[in-house]
Length: 87
Image (cartoon, rainbow, N blue to C red; front, side):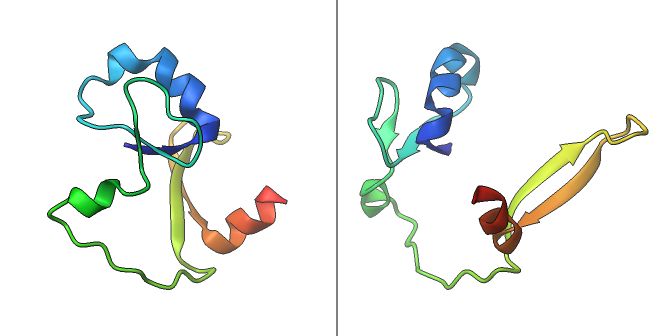
């Protein structure tokens, strides 16, 4: 699991229920016990990461909402929409 600092407190409070994750990496910020810093962790990985350009149309999240019917519906969030929501 890779998470940002804004989710650290929530993940730490649920750590016992997250035992199925082998590693929890924090992307930037003060790393609490039980987590590792994401920066540099990929260097020891057998998987080779490559850089790619991200466009506004690329997906950055998949969320589910019950809407008015109560049935879950997927919502795809793109980087373009995310940048508008953040500011």
